[in-house]
Length: 463
Image (cartoon, rainbow, N blue to C red; front, side, top):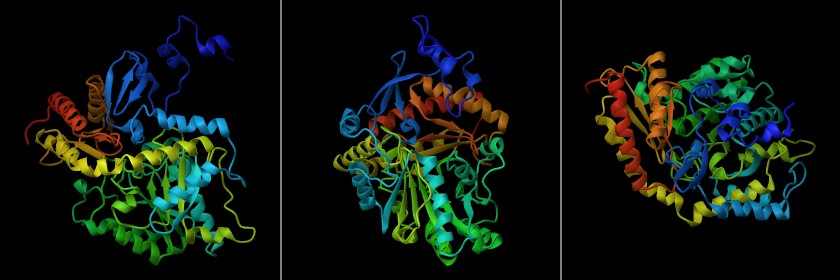
C-alpha cells in the first residue's frame, strides 16, 4: 500500500512523474509515454485549452465530443456548488429531489413526441446499458419474453460495459473481453463513400430488415443506431433511411433506440439528432452534452408506450445506479440547458455549420484527403493513399500515419482533434458549439499544413 507521502507526491515529484506512476489513462497505450511527455491540460476558456507549459490549443474535439458550451464557464460550476450547499447528494431509488424532477421535466419538454420518461445514469455507456436492459424487460412485461436480441451496425461504438460493448461493432474493442453478452448482431453501416459494389443506399436500411428476418422477428428486442455514426468517421444517413428503419421496427414490434450520447444537445444543430433527421425513436440514450461535461451524467428517455407496462402493480424497472440523477449533476445540467437555450447556441451551429463544412471541404484539393463528411459541428476527414481508387492505408501504414505523425503533429501545431483508425483512417472534428469562423479558419490552416506534410511523408501523389 502506498504511503500518503507517495500518493500525493513529494517536493521532487512533478505532475508528469505522478501521472506516470499512478494515473491509468483510458484507451491509452501507456508505453507511448515511456520516452514522451504526457499531455497535461491545466485550464480552458471558450474554445481553447492550455497545457502545463502555457501552450494554447484549439479544442477541435470538445474534449471528447462533449464540452458543448465551451470551457471555463464559472456560472455552470457555480450552479453545482450552490446545489451542493443545499443538498449534496440523495439517491433516486424510491426517492426524488427537486433538481432531478426539474431536469426530467425539462428534458421531456425538449424531446420530440411522447418521449416523456427520463431515467438518469452517470454517463453514456450506462445509458446504453440501461436502454438495452429496458428493452428486454419491456418485451417480457408485454408477453414476448423471447425478444432479447439486438441489431446494431458495423464499426459503430456504443460504449464499454458488457451489453454496450456487445452492441459495439469494432472487433478490436470486443476481442479482449469475449465472450460478451449474447444476442447482438450487426448490419452494414451508412458509409456511402465505401458502399460495396452493387449495393444501393436503399440496401442500407433493408439490411436491417434482412437481419431481423434471418434472426427471427420474435427474438429481436431492439435496433440501436446513432443519427450520425461516430466510429468510422461521421457516417450520415441517406435520405429516407430512418423512415424505413422506423417502418421495419414497427412491422416487427421492435424498439428503436437512438443513441445520442454525441448527437444530442446541439451537436447537429437540434436538441436531438433524431429531430435533424425527422424520426421518432422509442428510446433515446444521451450523456456528454447534457451537462457539457461539467459534471458526469447520462440518461435514457423513453416514450409513454415503453414506460406504460412499468406503471402498474408490482412492476418496476429492476435497475439503477448510485449516482443516477445526482442533485449536483442535475443542477449543472439545468444551468447548461439554460445556457444552450438563452445564448442561442443551437442557432450558432445552424448559422455557421455551412462555413465549417466549406472550410473542411476546401481540403479536398490535397491528395491525401479522400472524403469529407458530417453535419452540424460533427465532421470527419477520411485519408487515402489514392484519391481515384479510394485505396486506403494498410494497418502498418495507418499506424505510421496516425500515431507516428498526425496525432502528435496536430497537437504540436495547436489543434486537438482525433486521428482514428476504427475503420479506415480519419480525422474527427467536433468543436465546441460556440465556435465560429475564426476557429474554423484556424482549424483549416493547421489541417492544411499538417495534411500536406503527411501526404509527402506517406508518398501520396496526384489527384
